[in-house]
Length: 164
Image 1 (cartoon, rainbow, N blue to C red):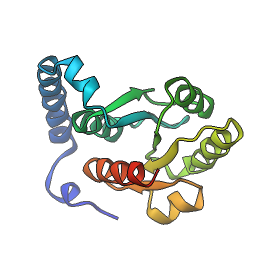
Image 2: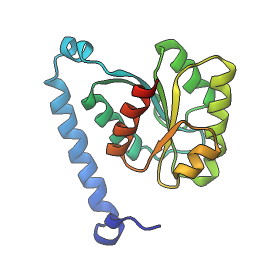
Image 3: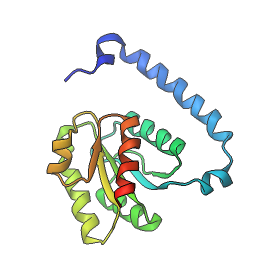
Image 4: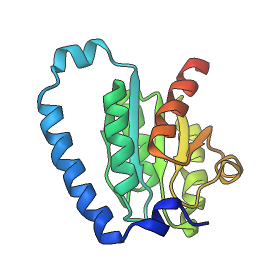
């Protein structure tokens, strides 16, 4: 499946745009009042890229959009062990665990995190996303939700919280 940008933009252009995006986010984050941010918090999210995968651009976009929407986000980075997702969800009393991956060979990591969360009694809902993840894949491996893009991840997270 080819996305629209792959037909019209070179990878180097995307990387330059990402650099500009990160610089802009740094400026905007400095302008946000932490007290106001805490008062308007919508939920707590643990976010990371699964063990065996280092592709974190999409995860970073989700992180910034979730923060802009009012979520407290605990970013674990990339190449994250299942145990770390669950441990952080427990420590932070997370509402949602967001799993990111770009390699289809890492699909089993979704069910590994889902199973471990159940075993440890973690009540957080689990979302999966990334290039190869579809709704069917997310469901097959036990996730409560999924999203194809970063803006859709925010919308789906809000829906999941309403149901919770």
